[in-house]
Length: 303
Image (cartoon, rainbow, N blue to C red; front, side):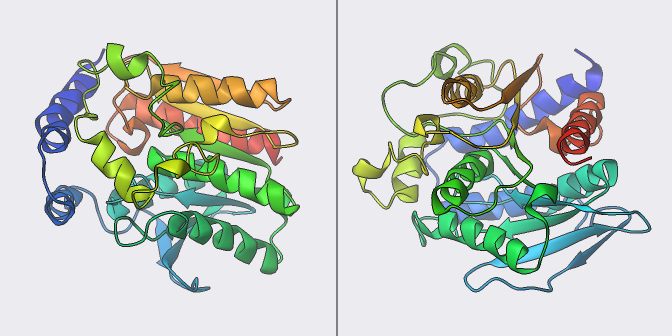
């Protein structure tokens, strides 16, 4: 492990993981994350950020690389356990992916719990995809993507698109996705990686989960909430990236197995020792490599 990764793991362990271990309120979490966000620029390098084509119920932004062809579209859903968000970090990540893949990015800042429990955020994601189709963007040039909770949302939106009979995107990218909110069938990594995960703690995971479903336990196993239980017939290829020490390692493995079991194509990249969200850390060599792999996936499935 290089010194950059060691430093990133230590910083995350002393900041984000410590915050997640404490029983803090959602407003306190949002304030603390707002302070961390100052480490990232508000606008990604060499990109324009626009708010044209607003969505009816949530904010959304375009991230357009300057002076580059951009004939692919990345429809991206941010992470944050469905209750917080890192807009600067997510813009920077999307900007880097779009530069590498010659794409435009569309970031959907879907409504958050507890103010707006499921299906509000999910509906925002579906509406954002419908908007791209209505703008006459070819579905075969669109990729869904998301990190952490946003990765789970991307998979749930993919299932909803298929269920509605709409034209399907070219593929999906799930970065350390949260795919299982149920008590049962959770992977062993939730236990075995509890200490080694430098970023996430599940100490108060039940509270965050309950906020997302509005206290309705019957929703935990819904495939749009826990896409590990989805039926993935006829879906396009999905790329998973996850770190070997993450508590949600098995969320990716098991979702990929489910996709393959129902006839779909899924690739799981397990990155040794990488912290949750490393793709968004431009100072990590493996962060740059992961972004390049995502760009390769996009070029492969939308030449």
